[in-house]
Each structure stands twice: as C-alpha cells, then as structure tokens.
Image 1 (cartoon, rainbow, N blue to C red):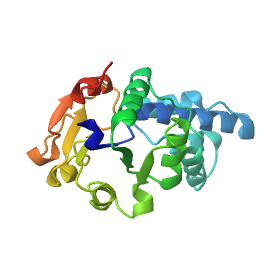
Image 2 (image 1 turned 180 degrees about the horizontal axis):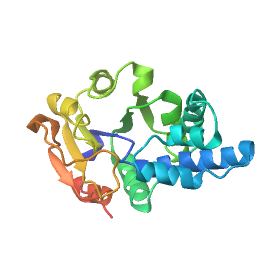
Image 3 (image 1 turned 90 degrees about the horizontal axis):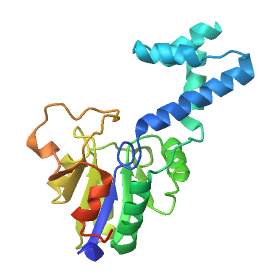
Image 4 (image 1 turned 135 degrees about the horizontal axis):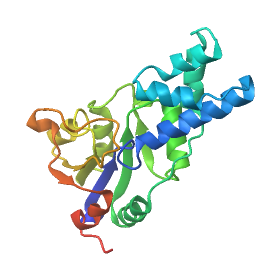
Length: 219
C-alpha cells in the first residue's frame, strides 16, 4: 500500500528535463553579457553547443576576455534563479503521490545552492531534499538512502530515477523497489550504455504519468 511506502525521486531528468535548466542558464548569461558588455552572445553559445566545444571558453573569446573570467561565468550560471517548471503530468502525479504516500523525498547530486534553487523554482520546497554536496557524497553513495530508512523504519521504499550509471544500484542493494523513466529523447545522460544488471531498475516506465498505474492511483 502506498500509505506504507516512502517514495524517493531523483531530480534532474526525472522531475523535469535538465536541458531546460541548461537553456535557462545560457539565457541568463546572454542577458547578463548584453547588459554588462553590450554584446549578443546567443549565436556564440549555439555554435559552441553544435560543435560540442566549451561554451564558456567561446564566450570569453568572443568578448575578448581572459579565460580566468570563465570561472565567474560558471558561477553566474550555477547560481542563477532558473526558469524551469514541472510539466502538468508530473505536477498532478506527484501531487497524488504526496497525498497518499507515507513520505516523499528527493535524493539528488549537485551543488547545494544550485539544486535548491531548482527545487524552489519547481515549487518543491515542501519535499525533503538531500543534496550530494551537503552530504559529502554522490550517488551511488549509501548515506542518504540509509538516512531515510532510519527516519521511516520498516516501510516499503521506492526510488524513481533515470540515470542507470548511478541512480538504481544502491537502492537495489538495499532491497528497495526501483523505477526507471525511459528517456524521451531529451535526457542529458544516455540510457543506451552497457551496465551490470544490478545497475538497472526493477521496472521501466515510459513516462512519469505511468506512476499512476504503478502505484494504482486514481486518475
């Protein structure tokens, strides 16, 4: 029963598309450089992305700035307030899960401030979020999973993510149920790689909306 289940989510490319965050960050840099240097860097960013070259190096070259400035641009990107939102399907499904589950949490890798700015922008500040930087570990580290098991003992645990390199192996070892959301074509990290069986989720679903069926929620 969901009422006896702790449901834990990954953040990036699980609750929203990480490419939307990247687009938001680049747009912030475009606006910043237009204001500070009176230069349009939008085409420079597009060209660097298409060529799979370093975007921030390209910006520095275009603005004729020393590459030491790259670090300042990077932190502007990391600390910008992102323009990202939950899809309607994610918002409705997540709302239903929060209503019926024992507890809901997020385990995410990344920098503390950057990830919490994402959480705030997505309207998820009411969900307990365990960020890797604040815990001194990245997935597949075990501390955050064990913390939730100690906080909510003797429950069923489900982890929902997308990255087969790191999302599922630890909860699998701990006996959790694991659910992978298939890449719709927008994910940053490919799922078309070879990994050992233990790194794969117990169940694959095509979309976040299918969690309604997985948890037998009313639509």
